[in-house]
Length: 174
Image (cartoon, rainbow, N blue to C red; front, side):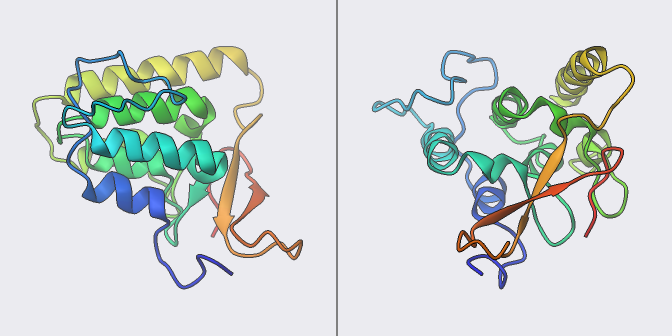
C-alpha cells in the first residue's frame, strides 16, 4: 500500500510543516478550486488546494492515531493561516467536526494542544462551534450521517491510496 509505511499522510505533513497559508483575515482564496499564481506568501494554501483537487478524499484520511487533517490544523491553530486551513477543510467535509481521534479527542480538544491561551483561540473555537452547529442542525437525530474516514491502506481493488471506512457515532476506529 502506498501510505502503509507512513504514520502520517501527505496532507497532515503539509498542514503541520508549511508556514505560508496566508493571513487568517483573508477569505478571498478559501475556494478549493482557485489556485493563485501570485502567492504572496500563500504557498502552503496553494499546495493544499492542489493536493485536495488531485486527491479529494485526502481530507477524510486518518493517520495512525486516527487524526484527520482537521485535527492537525486545530492542534496548530496558534499559527498564522490555520483558521483559513480549517475553513477550507470544514467547507469540503463539514461532518469532520464530529470525528474523534483514537484517544477520543475531538477538534475542540486538539485546539487546546496549540496552547491554553493563544491569540486566535477564541476565533478558532467560534469557527468550530459554528461548523458543529450547522452539521448538528442538518442531522439532529443521527450525528454520524455522512461521516466517514479514509484510512491508509489497501481495499483490494487496486486503488491502494485510500479506502473508505464507516464510522460509528462519529468516532474513528483504528
